[in-house]
Length: 356
Image (cartoon, rainbow, N blue to C red; front, side):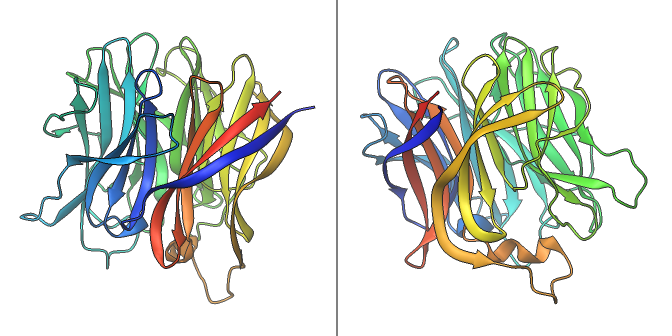
């Protein structure tokens, strides 16, 4: 029998913050990055908190990248660590702070900062160019493979009816000095029924075996489909066919448990609004769910109104999101997500125990 137990939960930050991502440094020390200002609308800057007791308590640690007030640009960066090279990367984007634009219309530039002193200081932001002339969705941190290769994902938001039509990986074998590009998610079917791909997440399951997952929608009306995944067996140079997870969700994060097992967190935003947690085994062709339960209950119910023409119009109605998790030294998992509580957008942590 397998199951997931919730051991404890608490708040990391409550200053209208969103999109957290946590890394483990050494011993029980953790860093968590998040955008501060505007909640999920992103109108501020990237800050971070530090925990020295495995995530039970947190203290503000400072700013990774300040808001560019002169040019009206906010930012949101997410952390990844390379323990072998003693580098912490913060990957994300500059984005205009004008929130009256609809999703996909706010100009963005992918950027990378880094720290070589355990997060005490951060380098200036360096642009990562992508081979598209359109806004980008940069929705997850850099992935550092065991080989040292860097994978930086971004989705093209190329037009009103083609948001997320293509997800790119920028690939670097020289620590970000130069980049090559590959397309990971793209639906080659004709325009009717084509799919778009949002909020991509990538994880290395074994040396050079990389899984990517995406929240999947139909282009144009942006109706949710079953989440999709792809597998690479050459370190992210090429990927196999797009396959359904058979899970109807939105943002999804896989965390490797070794061999063919995964801990999976995802948003369930239609019907009872929850963050769900699953235990899954996978092959290149199929996911099998062995356990599923609720990690966070938003205590609300959502059903699309008949007047809503596009899933994009629903985004401002959602009150939680972006669940991710890391494995701690004691074998438990620390999950983080953003949510609205008592009229404010906060960063919440949850400690999980996987029994499998």
